[in-house]
Structure formats: structure tokens, C-alpha cells
Length: 212
Image 1 (cartoon, rainbow, N blue to C red):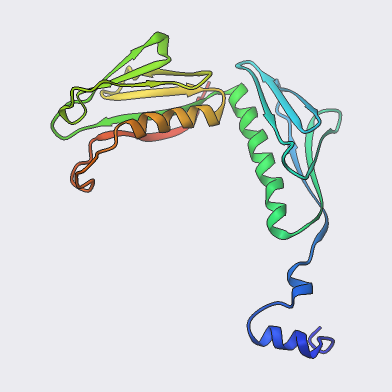
Image 2 (image 1 turned 30 degrees about the vertical axis):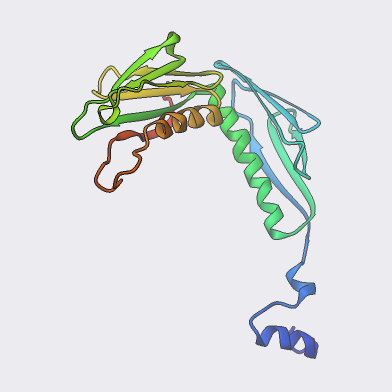
């Protein structure tokens, strides 16, 4: 290969770069496969994925990606295919499979985010209202303001029965569940103080799927 390289190629290599015609090399076709778990129903139509299980139905749209998405092996496998892609573009195949895998986990097991109320002096008081769809946070750093956080669609919040100062956020959609946890976290940010010293807030202590 080195013997066949032209003088311009050698110049590129001496400077630590690949020649342009090699750097932009494309893969003819790349494919990722994902098995459909038992008890889950999936339909794919025009890159619109719909997954149904015991905890409900979730949808996700992949129309913005230049991939081929279809069911194979009589509906027991999901296949994502991409043609003439560069190495960085190929990464979206694995991303799509990860998103669909999260849909499977959501309709089968649900996602759970555990959050701890952390305080040094003023005890943070969390009240669940609206049937588990809203959480009200009081007495953060002794402030009188009531922080009201509404959960996103399909997400519920509850107080932990076994652990003091802990709330649990659950939902089937990983995006909605994690974003709801983020809203709670961001509602209790310490302003105008040294955050290395003032560590009060509501923090995610653990997250994952709910075990049946």
C-alpha cells in the first residue's frame, strides 16, 4: 500500500493526516439487528415505530434519519440499514437500536428515577399533589417560595415508603421520565452562593428499570 501511494499521499501522511480520498471513505452497507422480546408487539411504518406491551403503547419517529428501518424474521427482529455512509454517520444505527430497546424496556418494565432531598440546615419539604402528577417543594434554603413542578405526560411521582427524604419518579417513556427528574433537579438550584459549600437540592441517586 505504501509503495502504491503517490507523492501527494505521502505528503499528507508525513503531516499525520490521511489523504482526502481515504479520509472520506464510505461503507457500502451497514446493518444493525435487534431482537423483539416476548410479549411485545411492534409495528414499523415509514420509519414510525410503535411498540405495545403490558404497560401501554409508545411511539417514536425516526423520519429525520437517512436509514432503512424494517421488521424481519416474521416480526421477531428489527433491522436498521444504512448505505454509503461515513464512519460518524454509521453511529446513528446503534443509536436507533438503543432508542427502540428503551421502548421495549418501557412497555415491559417501566423506568424509575430515585431522587434524594439533600439539606444541611433547612429541611426540604416535598408534597405530592394532583394524583402523583405534581410535586411541590417548600422551605428550600428557608425560602418561602413554593416550587411547583408538573410531571410530563405519562409520568408519576410518589414518596418513598422505605427511605426518608426520597421521591420516586416512574414512567414508561425514558425521555419523559428523565426530563421530569431534570425539572425537579433544576427547580432547586442554589443561586448567588458557593455551590461547593451549599449542597442543598434534590439529586438523582439512582435510576434504571423497575424489576417485576
